Image (cartoon, rainbow, N blue to C red; front, side):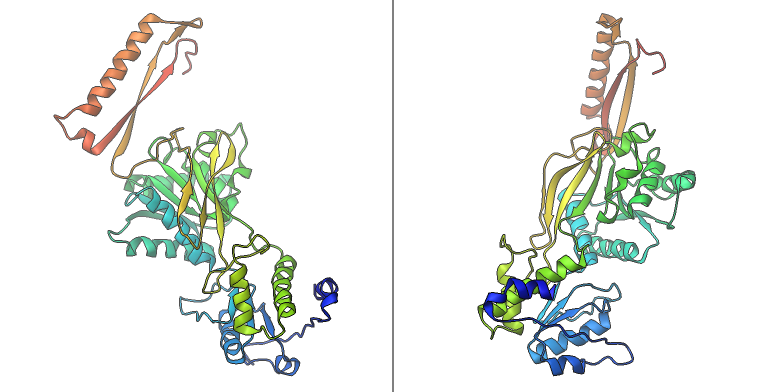
Length: 400
């Protein structure tokens, strides 16, 4: 990377060199190698909260630019954010729990939420941070039930998981499932939950680590009714997956700053990155606290495909969303205030492909009955329940 950039900027007459150093718990001090080489930029790959904090303070003291390429999960909210530091990997846990919280708020859900999470450390913390946001809301958003799923479940575990979903979620009137799991686990959980939490009035929301859940299904799968239509998930734009690409991008921006003005170091060089945020030539954008701004696509399973239906930006925090398809092939978002009761009419609509007059009258009577129940002011039914009619032509297919 250094050679590539030096060749690219050779006409400037400036060159970039690299000095490596290792820091450990046994020797948690600023490396002497960096002092001797008079470094201007620190690329922090320690992936350790405590060791990164050393460079946060040293960067401010020595007016250096400190770039954290990976962030550890081992902090408990006490991380000091330096004025000379940039974070290529945002606090993903803080970011995505905010995304899920914004999504729930967007649809005004305040109760009937349930959480399914794996025993993975990252998923447990993400779920807890989401819960904390819900509990801090005024009025509080109620989490009605939770399940922890062990890692490594398979198709053979679906009956057990299905029973747990019924006991821990459905019987507690959970209608909105927020799932924190990898893609394979999400696939098996959705298969297990199809008989318990499916159809009109329900919602399944899968956090981004599980967004590839559809890879575990096929068009002949018996549970296709849920996975094909109605699940919502999220995909991060420009995730940090290729370390070489990330390092090259941040060093190129640093080199551009040096070439523009050799005196631009530390705080001023960091400001260069902030000024480039949102510019089409910038690979990454940063917020004022140095955290990388994250964009997510909102995806919705429709007819067996994941369709992009909206977006979310970590800096703005607003859900931008179009038409969603919900379980039960509904386009109206489910409510948390009323339980939905679906009444199904099996009737002979046609005879040998032609309209059956008697069946038409039956259907009209059914529609009137649903309307009467919905509009009935003599009871409190319509205050508590939402009634929906579902009709199925059985004349030409007795098996239905």
